[in-house]
Length: 294
Ligand code: ATP
Ligand code: MG
Image (cartoon, rainbow, N blue to C red; front, side, top):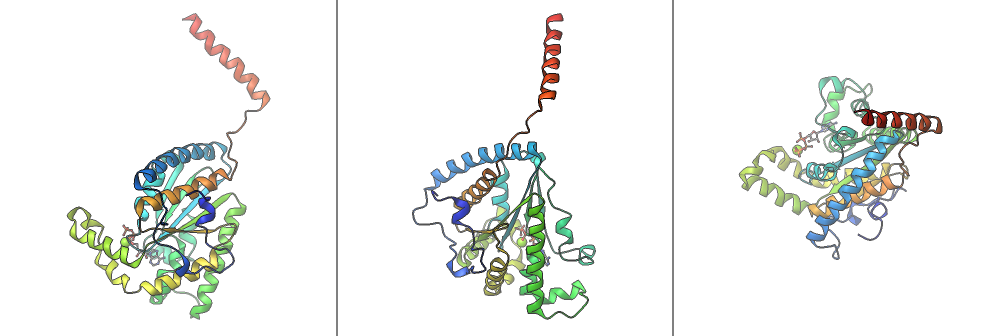
């Protein structure tokens, strides 16, 4: 992965994204598994250091959004990528079907409550994008949302894209760096992973019969992803489309992007002002004197 990851995987930001042009398999000249595992370990260390600075500087926060079809490997990627960072500076929020309380608010409400504080990394495992993905594929879900006017559907998705773009722009202006990942798995690889979940007793718990039913809507989901990514990939909040058929490759790619983005922020430890430094010197002397008196 010589070319900078943040450029290589970035979806076009001019509305021209097409699913058919996005890879699900790693490139043919991808490094071997062992090399990828080693690279992942290096990236983990770098991410840990960058996060410490993000936290100390307390100026930016980082919002990582993960969207994917079932079994694409969101959970494992989040675990692998974040295993090197201090848990105190990091939070993961998983968005499930909305509760009654959440349905009584606008569609962005529950996500804005879960945004990371300054200095922290916040991870959304699914997000408000579900509102233009699963809800678009199953528009009957809108019935529970009790919208004030019977919406014309085409208009509704457009309005939602606009709300999302404006929210993200607002966040960026206020110091939240927004990075969005689509872990792009192929239909065939999903089938294999479902089969593995069915045949291996230790993986049975990951399987839910509803996931297989959702597979029947594959093409609708691809169309919804294409539209959503084209409409919301912007220079200030781009989408990164990551080939997800090989889990190790995917984890390296995601880590490369995050490290790249954080490096671009010129994160630095706060510098102690001159006046404080004099006081620090005096305190240092006092502490050293304590030892001599013992
Ligand atoms: P796992 O890998 O554990 O299955 P998951 O993210 O699929 O993780 P589930 O509890 O299986 O978690 O699924 C959450 C479900 O909630 C998904 O099917 C998702 O589409 C749905 N969901 C999330 N947000 C919304 C929303 N705003 N409206 C309707 N459904 C939603
Ligand atoms: Mg699921």
